Amino acid sequence: MLRLYNTLTRKIEDFSPINSPGVGIYSCGPTVYDYQHIGHMRRYVGDDILIRVLKYDGYHVKQVMNITDVGHLVSDSDEGEDKMEKGAKKFGMSVWDIAKKFEQQFLESMDLLNIKRPDVLMHATDYINDQIELIQILEEKGYTYRTEDGIYFDTSKFPDYYKLSRQNPEELKAGARVEMVAGKRNVSDFALWKFSPKGVKRQMEWESPWGKGFPGWHLECSTMSMKALGPSFDIHTGGIDHINIHHTNEIAQSEAASGRKFVNYWVHHAFLMVDGEKMSKSLGNIYTVEDIIQKGYDPLSLRYLYLQTHYRQEMNFTFKALEAAQNALKNLREEVSRWDEQKGHIEKFDNQFFEAINEDLNMSKALAVVWDLVKSKNPSSQKAGSLFKYDEVLGLNLSKVRKFREEDIPHAVKELLREREALRKEKKYHLADEIRHKIKKMGYDLEDKNGKTELKPL
Image 1 (spheres, one colour):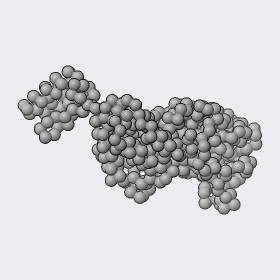
Image 2 (cartoon, rainbow, N blue to C red):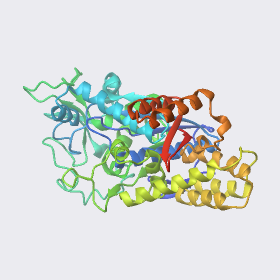
Image 3 (cartoon, rainbow, N blue to C red):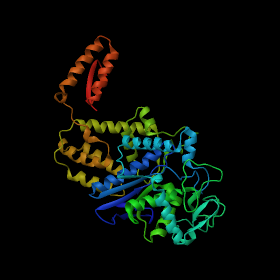
Image 4 (cartoon, rainbow, N blue to C red):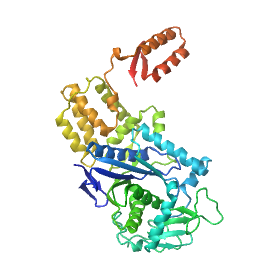
């Protein structure tokens, strides 16, 4: 049913899991040294859509995600400062506290965008011994060598090293893709274990058979994904920036260790630009989900905006586009609020929606089906029956928008409204605001306009 673009083959393929109806997915999670911005979160909404589509199709999904809380250097060349240590200095906190702070910010951003939490969330620091064991397996099989700064994987021993990236090794020169670390045999070789620099006390370091240090970034993903999902699993996701180095290295070390194919389908998400520019601090165009809310936008309007661009296409974020998405979502909610209770469905639109989402997750086409359904002359109860089913994929919480009748308002809320109105007439606005907060806690919002107060369910 589902057809997915597979970076490994560069083709859209029929999806066939290893142990149907079970599906194992590993999602590259965040490095928790700084805030996750809307570019990062677009990718996680993309993963969420994939998982929702699989569940819509009847599969039983197990999603595993890592939290990178150690071992990610600022350079892909196995050089430079550890990002976690860098974040600790920037914010004046310990590495461990930085990890907790930004993991929480990431998870809160997921919740705000209605991204379902992974079934298994694994932290790199919890699996240091497992990572050491994986290096030992590679060492026994002859894939490693030692330099002054660490233990490296010898990519010349792995003939299919470039099968994911499809780079030409003859054209790959030192300094073009990565800087050449002293002692490395091949430009593509990568660190499995980095030694702590002499005379430097790191906040995160561990003893190993080779010396005190910390694991390479790529190693953690191979270790944790295989521990949770087995040596071979169905889908691995990430950003397109992971293809040439991170995921290429994951494949090499995993398949060298297990002797089996690591992953069957590789799903990569394209970048997000802001006003046609890359996000950077110098341009002041890095926004978090919290920033979007502070500017007066519903975070689900950002989710709606993400749905309008295919996950493999670069997306250009503008506040004008976000405003349009918010208006579209508002109009959709207003339509739904007038519908009768769901009863039945409309097969024609159901089939069109099903085809769109299974066509390599074509969400813009799926949204077009939604609006065709909304504008159709079918009974609203049937439209509700179909749309609320689609929303299992869209994730816009449309089923929470229902026809609001005055008789549904609890007596206690009506009493508070009367009390608030009396206080407003007496110009006791501070006390009136306190009642407003009480009403909000009971699940209702107020809007004062044209001398009247309108009540709406949250």
